[in-house]
Length: 450
Image 1 (cartoon, rainbow, N blue to C red):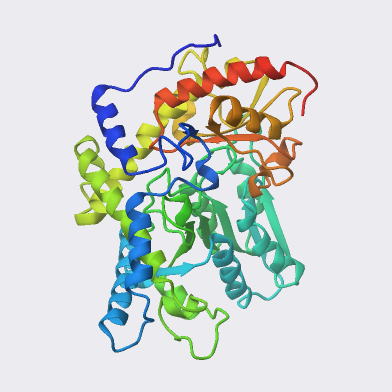
Image 2 (tube, rainbow, N blue to C red):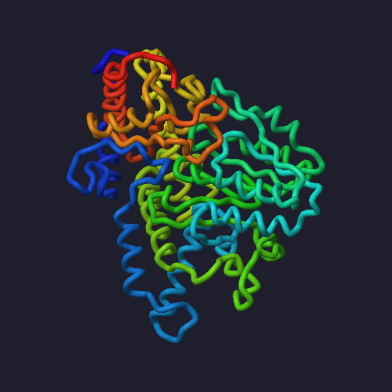
């Protein structure tokens, strides 16, 4: 790639829409210090919508009286929680808000779920997952194995060349002793999409319960829990433009029949029996504001995707339109990062860049704009720091953490650099990143691999 080469620019219509989108995110252009910068660190936690932060603050200040009280403030708290559940149900196209559980984090919800499912096991069962999972969807199940509650946790391989799940290997691991299949919808390291339809078909043949870790999915891909019939779906609100906190969809009959750990006075029915401690009305207010934003976006773009939203109505139709548009727009970001059909101007065109995951532009529909890489001979932490100090581009390199994922083990790495984009990012930002990447490679020079 030649330094200073250009990625294609957005059309004037897209540019105007992106300008409106970016106004919704106060830190899209500059950080709190006033420094102009590019934010490519969204997989670790996206930028927060202003309306979500304002809704959180209002709920915290104005409706702090707890639920079940006689005051109007207490009743308003209950209304906010109810509306938050409804908004998440609409986002996922869930049958009812009674299917929506809130939690501290995706990790806490998955541990909570694993403990409840473990109470149904005999010790002879196995659980199947993948090698590109986030540890939030690994350790809760390994804990069941460690305690002898299940016999084994099995890990399906992925292809190191394209980062895609080895579906035949996955299928070979599922047998009549498989009681839980739990997978990430999208890898938070590779950006690879899991073939959910095929995973469900294989899992349901043996009657396994299915869990979807959607933390890195909901920001990029539309989900419909009635069409993609996972039994449980978990995601984090702070990866979806809101505050810290998480939500879980569960089939209502399973939420009712399973026995999660809880205190005696907690309700015995409904989603409340799954929620440890007092519910946080500010979390529900914030997620409703996120859905209001996505509904606004859906209204702006629904004509472009109307053929794919005809079976939905009301807010569900607008939310589906927004996510379909986001998925399609983000393909243009991925295409630009990879250099387009010529592949001559993207990340993989730089010989010193070792890029992990799908690189073929013909497979853009199988990935989201999350790119993990190393520069030959350069320490990843130093690379991320250099990008920030020299080019004002926020990337992430976790020393030893591997983005809390098993993925890098397949490549024999413990650390890499990640650039993770979402729909408020622009092609101009991609152009700046690619130019900066070329300069960074020159700065560090070539040497031994990491």
